[in-house]
Length: 108
Length: 115
Image 1: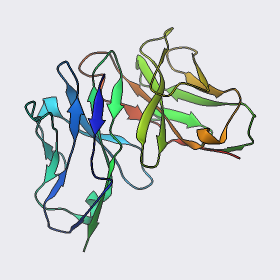
Image 2: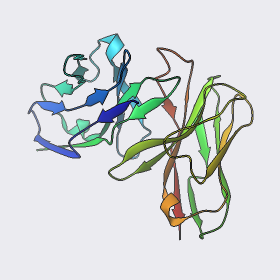
Image 3: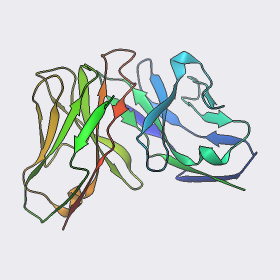
Image 4: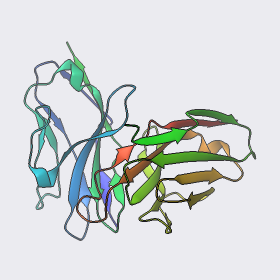
C-alpha cells in the first residue's frame, strides 16, 4: 500500500521567513514524488517533481529515502506563496496518492 | 487551450437523486481520474482509467460508477446521491503510465451538495 502523510494542516509564517512543508511517505517500491499547489480560485497544478531536481518559484524538495520524506522548502516566503500544498506519490499502476494537504499562510 | 473541462461546476441534489459529472480532455492523454476533495482529507481517488476501455476502483468507489466513453471523456455517475457525497469533485488526466504518470492536469472542479 502507498501512503502520504502531511502532518500539518496549517502552517503560518511571516513574509521573508523560511518555509518547510513536511511530507512523509510509505511505499515498498521506488517512489516518484511530487508537490502540487492550489492557489485561491485556481486549478490544482504541479509545482515540482523529485526526479527533475529543480527549483520552481524558489521552492525545492529533496527525496530522503532513509527518512522516507520529501519536504518542500523555500528560504524566504512571499505573500503569493499562500496556497494549499499537496504532496503526492506515484506508485502502483497509474495511481497518484495525495496527502491531506497543508495550507500555507504567509503574513506580513 | 481548454485542457480538462468538467461540467457542471455546481450542482445541488436531493438525497436519492442521480446525476452524472462529465469530464473531457483535449490533450490526447491516456489516463483519466476522478478525485473528491474534502476538508481535512485531501484528495481521494474515486475511480481511474489507465487507458481507453479500462476502469479501476480507487480508494473510495462506493456509491459511484464511471464510464470511459472514449479517449477524451470520462464520466462519473452517482446513482442515488447521499449527503456523504457532498464534496468537490476533480477530474484529471495524465499522458502515460510510468514515470510521467504523476503529472496530472486538473479540471476546475465540480461542487456538489446533497441535501
